[in-house]
Image (cartoon, rainbow, N blue to C red; front, side):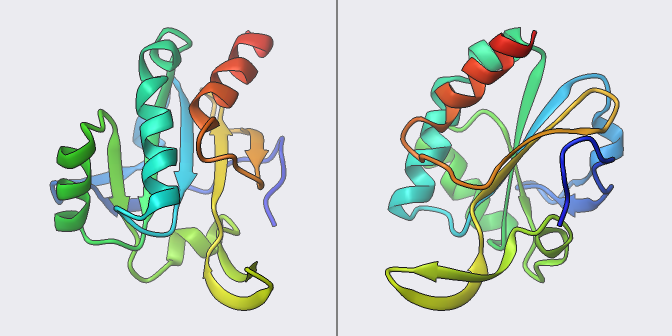
Length: 154
C-alpha cells in the first residue's frame, strides 16, 4: 500500500488518443491522479464533472488532472466528448497501474465483497512524491475538495 511521502511509481499508459503517457514525463506540476471504475456510469460521471468544473482553479494552483480506468481509449474519447472533459483519461485494461497504486482489489459494494476498481485519488507533488491520498471520495464534490486542499497547502 502506497503512503504519503513516498515516491509515486512511474507508469506508461495510452490516453484517449492512443498516445503513450508516462507519469515521469509530467514533472513540473502537481498531478491529481484519480482512478475510477467505468466511463459513463453515474458515480464516475459525477466525479469527472466535478473535476471538470474545478479545472480552472486547479490549473491556477499548478495542478493537472489525469483519470485512469480499465476502459478503452475509444470509450474514453466518447466519455470526454459527451461531458466536455478537459483532461487526459488513461486506459489500464489489465489493471497493472491500478494494482500498483492499490486502486484495484477486493472492495465492499452494497454489503457484498467483490473484486474491482477502488475509487482512489492521489495528489502527486512536482517532485513525484505522493502528497495526499483520497481513499474515500465524495464524487459530487471531489473537484472542490481537492481545490480546497491545494489552497490550504499552498
